[in-house]
Length: 202
Image 1: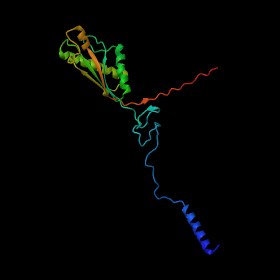
Image 2 (image 1 turned 120 degrees about the vertical axis):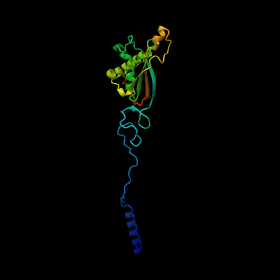
Image 3 (image 1 turned 180 degrees about the horizontal axis):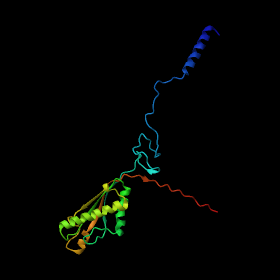
Image 4 (image 1 turned 90 degrees about the horizontal axis):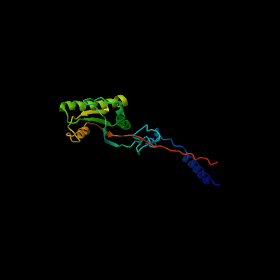
């Protein structure tokens, strides 16, 4: 092998070694997005708008529960004694239905409306309808732990009749209490996973 070939061989070997050297970057690249999913809902932190989702919850693409607009009116069939706003415990079950709805939708608010029949003075019925509405909100607070800030009581006297006040039946229908629930019902619905075990055939 002549000297020229030896020189060329050494040059090629040197070039090959240098191409395998590790190059250190002065400023390492950083990950642009946080790919962690600490609440385990399948939505990465970079896109998760509702952190700490309950495990197994039914969520949308942003890790949040769906929003349901609430606009419900429920008539409470509470029988009040004449000129009284005391509520007997036997009617608490109806008020509980309102409480359960509010517990299910923590952002919902309720207005309790008191209505009277057109018998007696307007002022007397206005005070009576207000007291009856407030009696219902008090039961919601005391018996079912609904926060007072979510409750409003309004008395309408006999301004909003739904039947003829000239008949006993009409007056009976006009003496009523209405629960009007409004607001958005952001909630996290649960996915229920059902597992079955086949019975072994002996």
